[in-house]
View (spheres, rainbow, N blue to C red):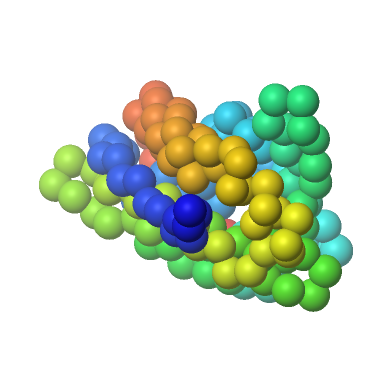
Length: 160
């Protein structure tokens, strides 16, 4: 049985793209949005979203706990934020948030693409409903971002 290697989820938010981008690109808040990621911090001197910046994510899924290192591959305020999880010196999973302005706010599309995975992970994915869990996680993540973005008032935060 083949495991899907990519997926995406879209949600509409009644908030401007710049505000949504400010929430998504602040990886120190990812633990507020994601049901799997507990927290993230910038590493190697990075202090904010910029192409090449690296951060560490701390994750939990049931009894499993693990950390990842990621690098930002797109940081276009109000339009796109993307990062790649790296394993050793290889790109493993690419996560992307695309923002499109709408008449009433922003359409956010979150997506992932498995670029490469070691054999142990590929075998594990055959026995666990990982694609379904990732899809559910993206839906929860976007719903939480929507709630936060729509609760804010005033001008969007500066992006950077």
